[in-house]
Image (cartoon, rainbow, N blue to C red; front, side, top):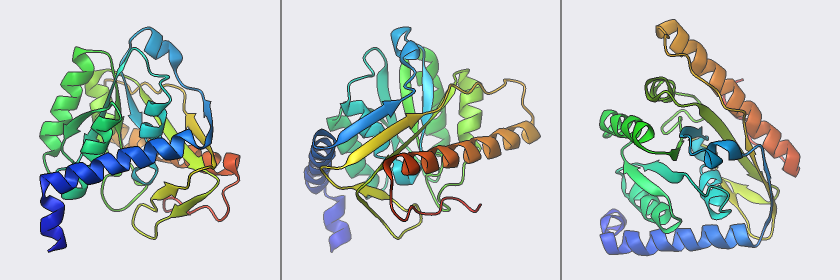
Length: 233
């Protein structure tokens, strides 16, 4: 019964709108520090891929609300699952263009659309490279997309002092209002064009380690108590 209700477009629209409102409320009532945002890419209208873990997926919407990205279109990926439909509606309410697809459903089509979009116009395309179990495990797809689109990758991590960490595969962080948060960006990372399979695996592993380290640094900056253990290391 609940699954049928969840598939209803009216219900999805209401819940997606509610999610967008809650995200705005949490952002507006909290104090945020943003570090290392690549403003030059925005000023010069240069496309890039923005990668963050699924469990820290609210970092992109929070940053979108901050209005620092003025010249680049903000894009994101949402799954075709009913939960993904609600998130797609929420993202659109926050001014983020949504591409449909996931690593399991419509993945190849979505990847080609992402590559074409990155080549066609100046965009900041947000992706979660661990969009399915296990969490905090980088997939090769994001390396290949950055290589083929010839755009840099920038890693993003956010954390807040007061939150709920879900006991699920991605340890999803749900921030409380009236908290203190930080959004961190890595320096731009250029993926070489002439990579073989070993080279792709090297960069997959390297990006995974760097993004985990960035999340752990964000947790440290806000003084998060009992931070979750990320990845297998």
